[in-house]
Amino acid sequence: MSNHYNLTEEESGYYFTSDSGNKYLITFFKNPLIDQEGNIHSAYSINIARNDDFSHQAFQFGYDKKIKNTIIEIINAFFIKNDENALIYFCFNEDNFGRSRSILFGSWAREVGYLDCYRRAFSYSGSIVYAALVVLKGNILKGLIVDAFNRSIDEFANPDKDNELSA
Image (cartoon, rainbow, N blue to C red; front, side, top):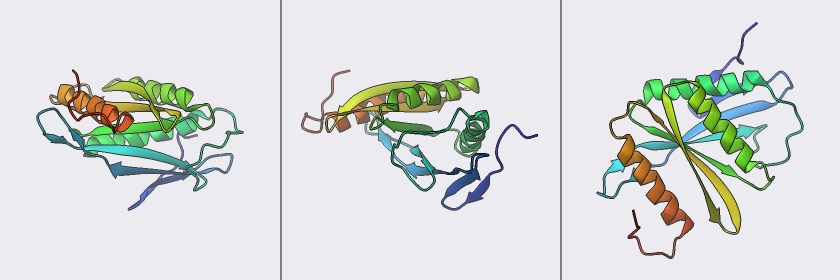
């Protein structure tokens, strides 16, 4: 018995169906980050939709280790193709589980052993948003990418502030 679900890779992303019948779509969208020197670093936002729904309705199913293993497999494939890039995951908190998803995603990223995960929480439109940046441990640009991620979050969370951010 496989420890993950069968994946279908298409131009729009990766698809799989869980044993409970939920259909998942994992997509990546380019989300460049700009560091303090103005250098652009390639980063991608990972998006996970269940049953063609990006909303955060309360989840009614138990923990499924095969979902975790399948998403880790997708993350592994991403970094094989994009070793100098970073991955960003935003967890919105409409269902009050955003923090839990953020912690879970970070633990999955660390579990593979070759990734570092940096998490941030910020307020946006009166709600808390949890963000995670995942980058290869050996990426020589990691410090600049983390700085660019933090700058991007600061600018997003404080759009009325001057572009000069404190270190």
